[in-house]
Image (cartoon, rainbow over all chains, first blue to last red; front, side, top):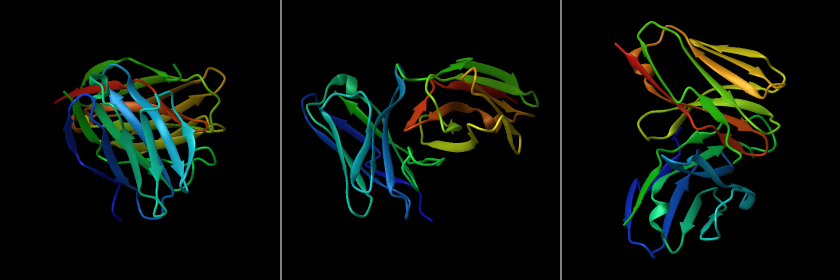
Length: 116
Length: 108
């Protein structure tokens, strides 16, 4: 069974631009969560999608948005990029929504975003 | 911040020694999970302990959970150089909240 796939793996963008990151979950997994990882702030929860609906949201500005498609694939968009958005963005999939049952999360390799 | 705390932040030991990492969290939880991350790559799930469990074993891993103190510990026995990585605890209530992590270095 294929794991969680994130594309692209690396990305360099300029301040003010926008970026879209993609995540394909494990087949059969309906929940996709996104995390931002930086050396200073650690792993911070962005949002979770389950069956195309946002279930949970972290404390990030509205520039960060996401969506989930009917095939459970998810995209994350960051608009008006700032230098501080440079980070490793990780996507995790699980069978069910994190709020419902004891489920482990399977992580992708991440997208390394650098804003210059 | 909702994030939990882990200590130590960094731990350096010799192969064969045991490594203990501690985690504290702030929310009510369904379970507490431990993950491992190698060099800024994706996280790998190690073990999940439910809120009604006190101890769990998996191979060389032993996890304890004290919900009254909102704390957990991960013990890796007989460590190997290949165990060198960052280890994160994650408290799951409605969502997974990660601790800051412990960087473990196992010297051959």
